[in-house]
Image (tube, rainbow over the protein chains, first blue to last red):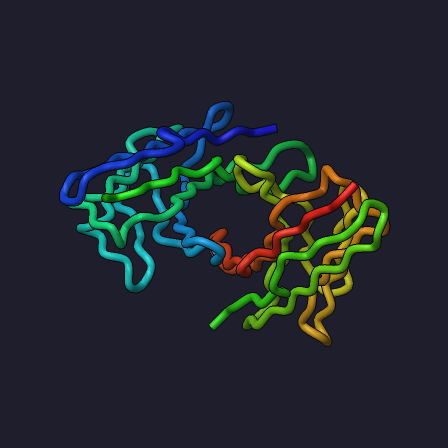
Length: 120
Length: 111
């Protein structure tokens, strides 16, 4: 099946630094990718929708200058947490929208394994 | 707005026990409903889905029926295995592939 990878899987950084997380679709082209955030023992919250070649669409309450999203190619989207602070520590998960396949295929969304960010 | 509520965990069962994880939703229109599973250290995987009322999604022995009258999509399995230990997320698909997730229910299955 389709695979989505994320890099790094885990990152620890100092407060005030910026961290970039990559999301790649490995065997399909994804015009749309999504970035989610998951706090411990809580649900996934959609942060933004990343569209190849255009600006990302952010959900209400998500600071676009804080969480920079770049979808430069059909297989790569990046999330940069700028000037990270301890409250940004979380589990960040991306997903990619795969095109329909087969006669009765439907578009499907595939999730990456997540990136755990710890800001000290 | 749209939302998903699922039973709190953790749920601990013995092998071969019957599993039910409750999920109810609030939505306008006719959303698609999903169950995702997250095994330790891995990403989310789609377990099953249903796209309209009375549809039954099934996969790997798990089943869930889209009940519009009760706005529910409860997950069931007749006989769980240790390998089913994971976190299960109920989710609702709204327009444009946006997915709203429940809080997740952790399942532990003991041998």
